[in-house]
Length: 216
Image (cartoon, rainbow, N blue to C red; front, side, top):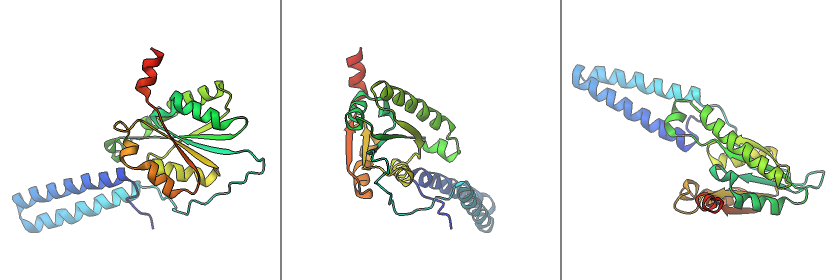
């Protein structure tokens, strides 16, 4: 059976829908009475649950177990970053660890607003993530690291888990904004990733504002 609420964005959507249902029931009860309000509540609640359920694609939750001994002997590095994916500090870390011939996969989660997610409007978020990812891969190639990349789930933990199912990483490099400006740090993504995945994880802080000032 599919779980209709798997992520924070879906939970937010459920709360919004629930609030709208109760508002409609309250207005109906005030105008037409309790029995009509009860019928409206039942119809709206059922419709909302069916709608969320039908829009949710099934995802099989399995233990994050993978093979970390590739036949070619190359070290596998999983890089996870969103807005900081093009940061120089992250690129320097990947170049340092990716030499001379590591297999590098860069995953850029397609972050979206809760409202757009609820409206199933993810194309813009994925397009913006792909644009950042392409720029990062090009910069890494110029630095001598031939990496590949993919746009991942909006939830960074889910994006890492999805990648690890097909990419047996020996280590993870996770990049965030500095404390105070990082949504991932506020949500404890770094700590949760270290607890969830049995693989060394390096946290790289990228200060894009500082890097821009240096370039200027």
